[in-house]
Length: 116
Image (cartoon, rainbow, N blue to C red; front, side, top):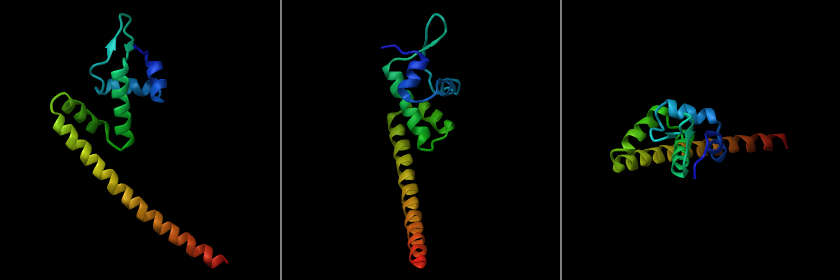
């Protein structure tokens, strides 16, 4: 199925301008354009943009994602390694956040006991 940029954006729950930005940055090398010049997206494109959205939400910079796009076209093993590195980094961040949460919980409980 073919989607307009507005339809793709709605499916992805992002603004059309975000898709245009990804395209301008070179993250969408395979996007097709109709005779009128409008971008046209298929299901594979939408899934790919969803991957880019996920990578940005995981803290990956546009430059890192550009490397991912370049590597995607060359070597699947490098992609797997890059994703594993990102996964490990997120796990480390989560562990730090859980430790901070425990510390805040402890401080909160201490103040609550003091007030009683």
